[in-house]
Image 1 (cartoon, rainbow, N blue to C red):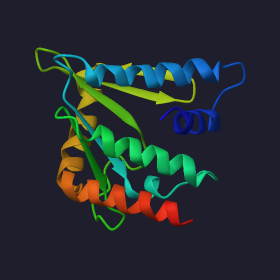
Image 2 (image 1 turned 90 degrees about the vertical axis):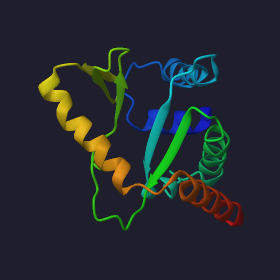
Image 3 (image 1 turned 135 degrees about the vertical axis):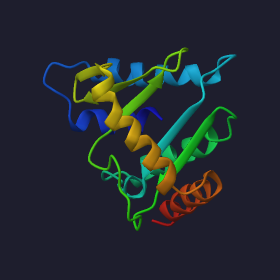
Image 4 (image 1 turned 90 degrees about the horizontal axis):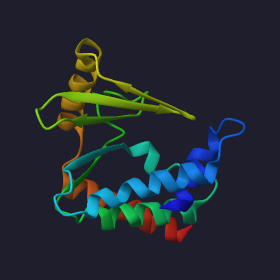
Length: 158
């Protein structure tokens, strides 16, 4: 959702960075999910992010509702890491993992206005391990969807 992306990106924006261009780029990437032969994607979201309104509960609600629509796509999996999970892999970081046609994984890490691709196998290994751990500790897709819906509905009450 553009308003949510704007809030997230503005929080850590470096001086001189074109925020609207960053928002457009981030939102534009979502069009890939609707293309024929769209890639299969899995998103893991820490439960605490579902409650972080950044001062704008209506924007967070719209984002959660957007995620509820997005998760209906056959190629999209959205799973929540519950707050009471004992295993908390990758909790202090955010990254995207991609897999080439030959199965080779690589990672993209984005911090503020800096984006970095990690392709060195010895450096990618830890991210692969974290992704496996995320699969193990996350709620299943149905439970994650129910939690997204519940949190969004509670935001309506505020």
